[in-house]
Length: 638
Image (tube, rainbow, N blue to C red; front, side, top):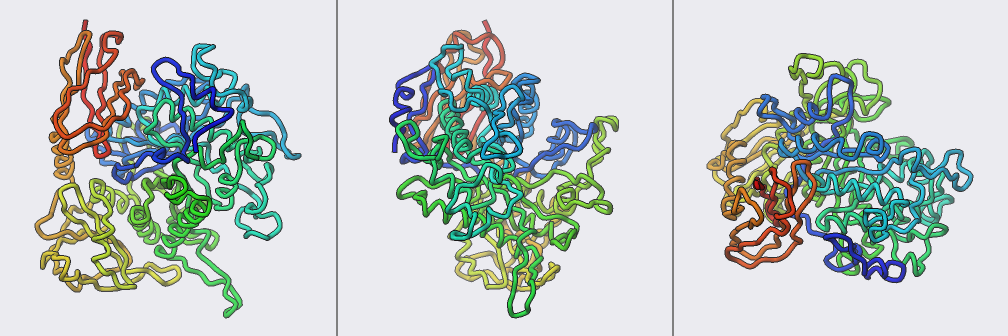
């Protein structure tokens, strides 16, 4: 369904080198395919003055120039609130983002919102004790055709913020997550079933119950609409995501309402419901709160505090959102399916208040959830959080002990002479091993099916770009507060796995130890192991080299380089592909954008438009396909 009526005049407008979006996420083909590798992400967090974003990114992704090994993170979730950017300037974090890119970090998620005091909506809705936490003037027109120097209406504060944000950080960002946990509530209504008084399935969530909005849900849908129009206008390949939700009932409310400000009704000015304005369902999952149920047979609670039960809750939460989407038409038939990312999740390393918590459980869960995310089509998983916020012995909050590193407070290199003193947690070692061994591989559903896993064994098959397989296996845990489990597994003869295989344990990234074992009667416990054919021992560095060699297939070059007034990009395709070419200046600002186009098999020479208007200097020319992203330096000299 196209955007009509109130948006019709907007569709006809254009500004500068781009035209405003004239489609919605309800239109066939409007949700871009995500064909990149699964991304192992993290929330960097804040600790104290001994760290900054640069040094935290070093220990998250690794910095070879400093000899810092890193935790295996390949993408970051980063907060860039309006109040911060308005105070310090919109380019305040460009240097950090360039540093992230230099470490190989890409496809980042930025979560947005949080207005400055001057731009905040100060209305009190439905008798709430607190005023709205959203932006004022969101119902002003989004676009004004350049009347004030930008194509957006500068009186629409949220629109202007999103426009400037995407313009500045679009080169580094794949997902824009619209605020954080918009359905967070202190009330017990989000989980209520249909028919129960106060539930959100039959009633829209009252503003006072939405702790992070304090505004009608229609206003949040308005945020999605503004975000969608601006993001898709500036970068149609980027994604708009809801903000890390937890309640399926809230999602249903988004899908049954429009951004009409009084009751969410469909009108000429508000023709589409909330699902038209996002591509991605971002959710948060902390399964430690769900590992018990009431059993009348024992007249009490039954507890399932072990890693496989926690993973099952993660998968069940994702599937509950899929059910809502399917019921509202987002099943790929009526409307395009949504992508999924999980931008916060984990369990603690310490038992507090009777919830699951142990080093073994956190390690096993952290590895298993990465595997199950890929099996269940979750494109990115961001662990909460990079490092512990307190020593585990004294921690009194479960969220303080979910780190990939031990307590980071007070030990950062900024006050220790540039020396990095961080120490992995065991979950951090397991996370890095999983990322190191699987980052350049994709989940293979057919091969996993061929494994014919018994009921007490879980696992998956992954295939790299050259056809080599890695199998992840573990015995399923089943005992409350225990990670003890035991099973054996034999590869079926039909899979043609070599008689002997290579086994790597959860701590391979530290030990670099590989054991050759028979491919039958493989002993397993509750911790995942990684199995490859005997001839397929591929060091991690060699995997990276192989991936770089894949770039050579495209024979990419920029000529002339240095350039004066003209330059072109030359590339070769072995089969038809969608190609997009972008050029960024040293500050990460997009200066040339050749929109996505399909090219046939063969060699192509594509002129770069507008070289003559660019100042002398160094630029980054980016070649993107559904399979790969390659960067080349372009020098303009006059």
